[in-house]
Length: 130
Image 1: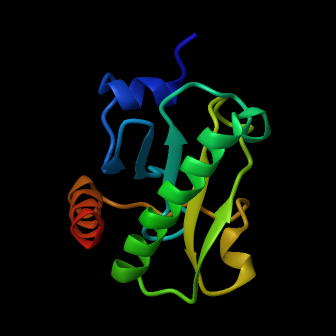
Image 2 (image 1 turned 120 degrees about the horizontal axis):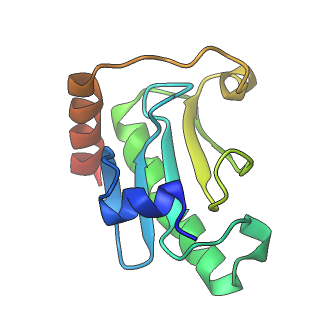
Image 3 (image 1 turned 135 degrees about the vertical axis):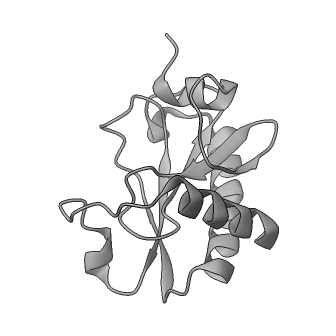
């Protein structure tokens, strides 16, 4: 069964793509907790991070690291928060969230709103930082 994220990878659903390689894909979260909040996913459908093949998991983490470092070049923050919840979409995904306090990763917070132009400009800056 094709997930929402698989449809984003295939281009059936638009996204603000940050990075892509043969195995992984990163795009801006459309309901971000912080400017630069990005989702990093494997292209191969997997519903749970701990069920991924070890090599695929290693690759996902290394890919996320590259994306996180690029986000840090564009969005001022103390750290890049990384979390895996995986309940909202049944496709493994890592949230990369620029943070300054531990409370910046509280998913009960109101989500930020950005215009399409703001999302597009941010995605371009992060891609350039890669």
